[in-house]
Image 1 (cartoon, rainbow, N blue to C red):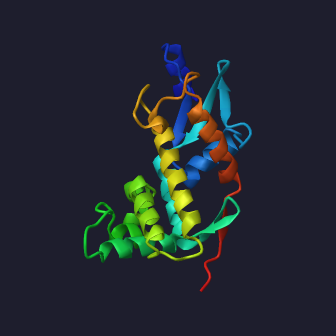
Image 2 (image 1 turned 30 degrees about the vertical axis):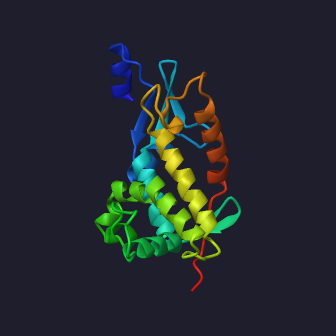
Length: 206
């Protein structure tokens, strides 16, 4: 709080503080600063300073949870096994490969790979979605969860683009900055908020 006050005194416009989801950080926000889901900010000198969890670490935590549990996504089941199956289909392809950036470390991460945000974000990508879609169309991927998993991968890819947007204009509409002229990003975020609030873990059937 002292740092934020000094920054404001220097004339900087402070809008948010960002951290990962480490226990000490969460405790500082919840216990010390009394932040809640409905009040994710503190007031300093009459200005609201919001708290935001670091996006890459959020995606890493989503991947880590998805690896161990199926998800109930939009009321239907999605499975990490679908991603593994698509990777194996692509890896053993006798013609050409689509998932050139995906490796065994993405599918079966060790202790250090589990800490990698990059590996998690590459997993929820357009390349993975395109490969999955092809495997579903060719009936190489026949699981009951495949279509749901595909939709979730697409949504997470688009979400990452929106949260990582930094240009006013881009050929990818999800990478354009949020503005009144282009309300699609805000509309997408509101829809995403709805299904994320209802996302649940489901035990993997053995």
